[in-house]
Amino acid sequence: MAFDGLFIHSLLKELAPTLLTGRLSKIYQPFNQDLVLVFRKERKNYQLLISANAQYPRMYLTKQSISNPDTAPTFVMVLRKYLEGSVLQSIDQVGVNRIINFHFSNRNDLGDQVQLVLSVELMGRHSNVILYDQKTGHIIDLLKRINPDENRARILLPKAKYELPPLKPGINGLEMTEPEFKQIQATSEPADFVRKIDGLDRDDRMELLGYLEDDYSYSSFKTFFNQFDNPRGYVLKTDRNKRKIFCYLPYHLELTKESSDPDLNHALDEFYEYQATRDWVKQRASQVERVVKNEQKKLSKKIIKLKKQLNLAENSEGYRIRGEILNAHLNQVKAGMESISLPNYYDNNNPIEIKLNPALSPARNAQKYFTKYKKMRDSIKHVNEQIKIAETNLRYFDSIQTAIDNADPEDIEQINDELINQGYIRKQKKNKRRKKITEKNLNKFKLSSGKTVLVGKNNYQNDWLTLKKANKNDYWFHVKNMPGSHVILMDSNPTDQDIQEAAEIAAYFSKGKLSAHVSVDYVQDKRVKKPNGAKPGFVIYTGQNSIEVTPEEKDVLSKKID
Image (cartoon, rainbow, N blue to C red; front, side):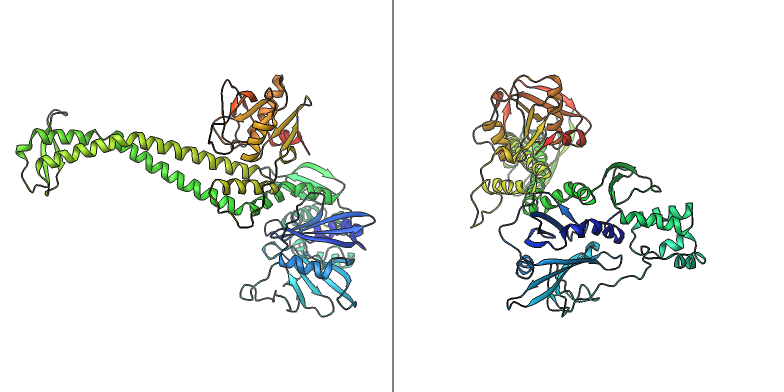
């Protein structure tokens, strides 16, 4: 189920007691569609993540470490002015709709008490966060300002009067009495009855319908709705391995239970952690990824073009043959001719058509074919060199893309710096000094044996890990013939099991992470060298062994340590 009205009702059962009377101490906007409100209550801090992401609109308490941008967007500056230091008086939901109102009490510049409302609308692509004055109803500011031409139902701009979005009328199942139930039951089949209930997404409707088809009674109806007043977090999978989160355990849907958690907020935090990280990386990496994709496209086209040139050059004998045949029959070539058919003594004297330039003499026409032949033969070495350079550069950009795929939000800055230093992105005037790489930047894993494995997440980290951090007797791992992270097993005498597990980690953090069979090279770090002038992340090595593994996400990530 998604963040539908009933899910929000359940979430507020946990959220409200935790946050009410708390003081809003910090507000920041780590990414375009996401806000973090930090509440201080009883000497504890609580981070409330609010996301107006069109695909994953959501809200829950998070314990993730989310960086605070150096420059605050306009909306955050407004929120800080009006809400920072204010006390959360109440939280209410509009019916069973996806609208939550946070009511704050604060004082204005004159010291007068003011009541402010932060309205969170979790409505797909129409999701928004709106701050308005409770007394006047006027909008102070909002996360997404909408042009009136794009939304004629209401005006979503500062100073406009706040109005609720158009809401479909429906029945609130949480408040339905038995007489009301029986009145509708008398005239409706279960499927029609379920369609009249408000606040349910498709999964909830199917589950409620299952309850009523089993037993079309008020008791069955209440059994379903009572679950939303005593929520837990359940993660289930579809037959296609798509993960879904519920605040109750459904019995009538074809889903497989993966996990349960008595704390719904904690379950939400864990459920969205991976997806949220990928979204945040995508937002931060937009410029970098655009450069990478453009370069990959240009290099791929260039390689195709160069290989066509190489093919023509390697099959240029036809020009030499035409030149020789012309030289042998110069007496038959007349001035002004545009072509001539002559016997080809390289092909049993079968006739060969030879094009001529009517402005040139017969001898000059022959010489032109020899010149073209020599030029194309001489170009083979140069074209091969250009293909090699282009393929090397393409592999480099493939490694950058793999680094983006494996990155955490804070790693994007290093990838951006790398492309600036390589001349692919223009350096900003206020470019900051590059932060020093430490072990904290790396991914860290503990194997079954207790040994430690370190993984670089971008080319700068790979170079630092392999060339500076690793001991010369530690073992270095890397997927064979494809982009991937440098992986160091911090041990000089690994067992076969250690090698297997480290290789699986290397395979997972590579372009082949979704493949069933991935070949991984491993060798002691002292055999890994970086050629002079090589791009970041590029190394050469000798004396390696190889192992074929299948990277399993669950197994790999279970070994990760903070």
